Image (cartoon, rainbow, N blue to C red; front, side, top):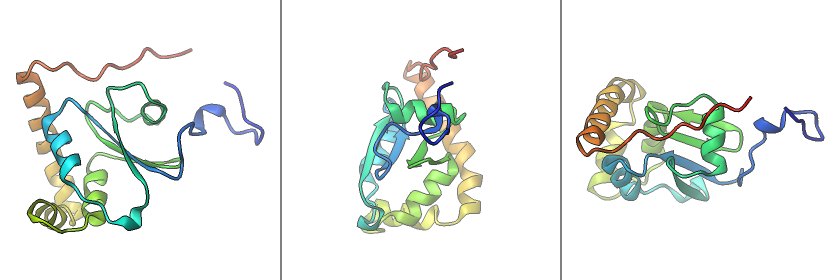
Length: 146
């Protein structure tokens, strides 16, 4: 593995805009897509970009390199920091505006970290079942590079 000028391994250095908050989700999942279209984030979060986990993009590769299974979890990335799964839903609830019926409901329901962690496996199971019934394949995992 190569290193950068600071001696840090090159693979750990993000090659995407580190000042942007990236949300990596399954673009083939109707629930994930609808959720990401409806959530309204506070302007305080700064620039946010949504990234389909099924596309080859530096932030998707970065998340995978961190060991996150994008077939099981969505991810939120800011610089070198990555959170996944229930922690993303909880963080989005805290960062949402709470305006409108959907955002108000989601911000109240997922503001509790404990409740979010409890509900996340059920939400993931529903997503996986729906994708299976729709005939959608899992997100391809690239072969390991040696």
